[in-house]
Length: 385
Ligand code: NZQ
Ligand code: ZN
Image (cartoon, rainbow, N blue to C red; front, side, top):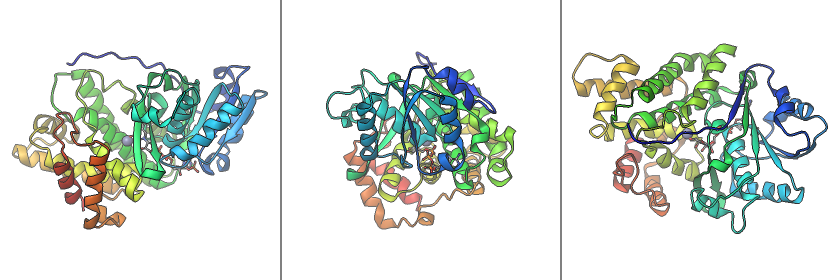
């Protein structure tokens, strides 16, 4: 096992009818900025519940944070937070709203050009406003981690930062808040959580038994509940299991003491930045060819994955690996998430610009061995056509 430090300070308040606990979680004298996305939080009544729970506190609101939140929009929220001297941020939404709120929290306290927050990958962050979360979509794990992804529309740059200053102080996880999600977002959530686990598990063995078995448990849970979540009417237990699985998939626990990959995510980011494809859809496109092309360096873990997650124990090593990757791809397709670029209208001519974008963004030595070069990334995009 590799050396590690682990600390996760986010308080999780989980279950039905928990939004009312905002009253005890947010300081009574706080000046609160509530941040949300498009129409869903208003339409579903969650915002009304949040306003009621905050009672007599001085509250301001900033709506319109888009999926894949933009630097341009968030800059307006920073100006509002400063002008109104707010001292607490409350994100009501999914990963985009939470990530956007983390950026606002850091940028509101930042001297100088706030894009440096992203250019420094968060290293330049010295302080941030405290923030809390009311989660409405299970997928990213942003509700229980210190990371955020922000897009600069002007340059088509999807950039990431992480800082311990932007861990949410608390996150309210009420699975009933996800009942209004359309099938596309539910399927995206299952795929995103699944690939988060894979990025931290499917590398090379370091005899990290607890982390491996936790990861395998999360993957098996997603395989069990995924189709039910997407194709059947909302039921509390499967939504609750998805919500906790997605949070556990990226809260640092299974990452402790193990190598991490993240090449699928980083290669996928360019597909969102240049073609507007949903984050989880990019992962479903990139992961299968990525695993096929890197089967030698991932061989031992691919065999463990085949056996323990998909119960594949017969046939040659290569047959088991092929079947495990095939089953993974079929699982995404069964959830309704297409796994080929052609299904999203991306033609072979687009590949040059995608590889160029990776190079421009310095994404030239990715993966747990730093061996995912632009050449290999090109092969991944080509195999995904
Ligand atoms: O904008 P509104 O109207 O609210 O609609 C949203 C949005 O269109 C809708 N929605 C959310 N909750 C709903 C709902 N609709 C009905 N009922 C509800 N209860 O869902 C749509 C998608 O929301 P979004 O927040 O964009 O989805 P998700 O949670 O998948 O977040 C994706 C973003 O997170 C980043 C991605 O890159 C992407 O920008 N990620 C963040 C990570 C992190 N911070 O750790 C890790 C991930 O790998 C990921 O990169
Ligand atoms: Zn993700």
